[in-house]
Image 1: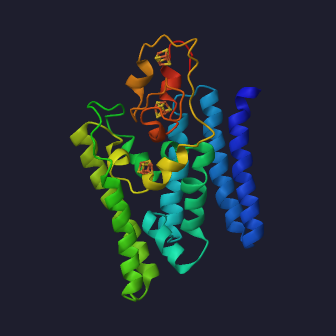
Image 2 (image 1 turned 45 degrees about the horizontal axis):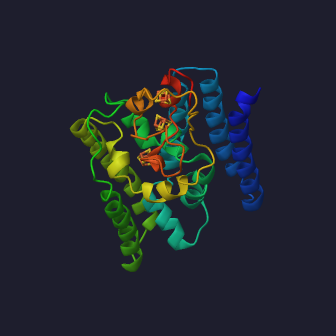
Image 3 (image 1 turned 30 degrees about the vertical axis):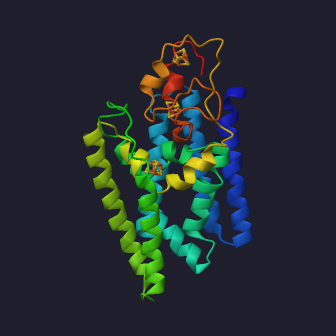
Length: 272
Ligand code: SF4
Ligand code: SF4
Ligand code: SF4
């Protein structure tokens, strides 16, 4: 039964968040929202433990589509980084601020960049592209993320400074246009660099939060060095160029790990 500990822990963590927010905010939506996400994620990890090939993709679609279509388009909540700045400026601890706190700022201390592997609606589409494993060496372009991060902040700050009217509506359209832009840039980069996750590696502003927090992640893939025969298969199948055989926190590209478990599935010696 020990192998089912991870799905159980994920369910407990999300249910705890769901109940705490439901009670403190007196809003049943939080119970529904975080229960749905928690059940989807624990279902995926359960299927993974049962060695079902498409476990991760199922979670990605369940959570990604729900967040983009229901929360973003139907409920009109901008869950992109602009939405986070917007709610932060207005001092409202709701929607995007809660989402960021749980999935992208404090959550990564527990589950690292699980968001990127199992829930992000941008990567949900990019992962359908043909370059699941990068075909070219990694580029030194990670600095671009700080520019997109700053631009998103300045965009929202300027709306407030200019006293723009109906910012809610602007945020709704920013969500739609921002997503279309992310998909377009992500697809172009994937084909240019022959790497589905090029957008995640070089452009995505959210990694400015995700990377430092996931450095301390509780959940991480570790290598049993007694079993490892240094065949290099894990590095070959890794979409994020992580040196997973190094158990230290400073492993190469360690904060890029999206917990996709491709390395674990492909290790011939079950060393991971
Ligand atoms: S790096 Fe950004 S685009 Fe990529 S999966 Fe994570 S949040 Fe999504
Ligand atoms: S695939 Fe397994 S055995 Fe091969 S290098 Fe990686 S951890 Fe070691
Ligand atoms: S293949 Fe392994 S090291 Fe690479 S991102 Fe997936 S879980 Fe992390």
